[in-house]
Length: 128
Image (cartoon, rainbow, N blue to C red):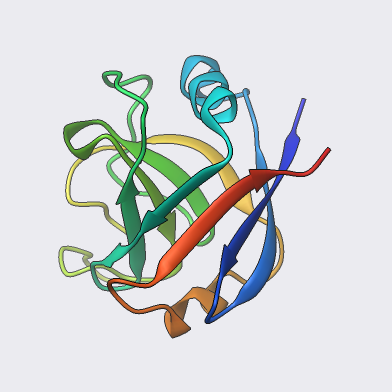
């Protein structure tokens, strides 16, 4: 079952997303349990990522992701939002720096995150 979250930055305002347990249930539950989370983001191409208080390994990791996917990057203990190509993408694919555990997706157009800059504040909270 999908659980709704809200992603908030000054550049985007509130953006709705969902956490789903279908691909990576352990990752989805671990992230959900730590909400709300506030951090400062880093950008890498059309990806936002930031460390979160979740420490776990790979769970059905993916080398490529879809537009709007939410992923957990184990090497950096980071929450990732994918909204376009990264520096290691080939062709039209979206490729993280290394495999990620996909645990959700942005609802609506994820390209709004192109407005976010490294160092911007982000807040992820539950919508209940």
